[in-house]
Length: 394
Image (cartoon, rainbow, N blue to C red; front, side):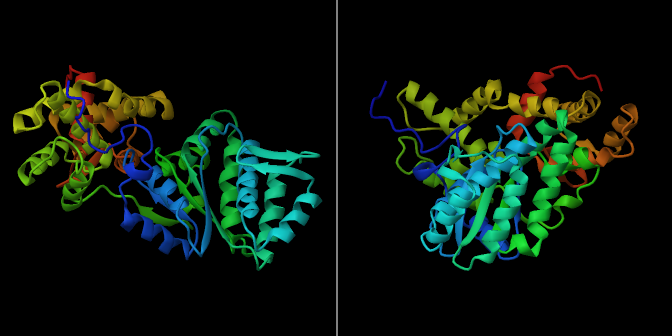
């Protein structure tokens, strides 16, 4: 094996950061522009790269904001959520030199001994962190020396969904208080939120409260896939120091196979092409080698099985059975019409809200509408669904 072989500069699975992060300046600028008018909901299908974007902008120095990113997926209760918000706010304040004197007095007043990203040490721990958050928000808004704060919270829908399973009142409390903080003039002047997650937040919120009005005030930022031109530039960026390089025709052939131009989908194919080329110690690729790599990726369930598992975990069985039949049909027939969707809705007793499921599948990156019909966004995902359900009796 060639020890001097250089793989493309890509990340598969973990969040892309530092040199592996591909700058999405359009999304980053849109977030900062929308923050001028309020808090933000980062709307994106899975695997588009929203977590990477959030982590990146949280690390960028800015005169207007103190930003802090937090993956909150592990939170298991409303009390834990409010304590985490309190901790994040204090971490931001701890880094503000202009408000240092006020903050030292605040810590003494509230029996705070030490602050770190891992938590807060108290002389006497508060009984009600929701109350403490509201006190803190009001004080932040009153102090002119305090800079604007932005909390970037990832995986909020997952947290809400898990909490709602055992504590609907807790999930409702999180939703209502987030909205309350965003709307009250005495709390919202200097603290804003960027909320994101890889499960459709509207679906989760509707299951918790039967309506989505608690999200209506959020400024929407779309984290879209790359355009064809951007995808060409992405491949150039990812392979600029790699052993395998691509000419224009090869790049377009690869992208025609991928169809869904998100870095994750492009990366898994670039990676497999490089692996196969390295095995034969031949950096020159062909359309046949791209086809071979594509077929290998399709057979690797590890890349795509969590897409199905998420639907199973987040939906009641009756909902999942309906949605899964839609996806199996779409994989085998390559598309599905609205009439065919309705026919399946009749079969599953879902005629009252069947298109809501389709909307959620679109938002989460499973399917897309093309000429009044629906197909999978990613041929990888379509091939996985077909392979996972090889027999379909229409």
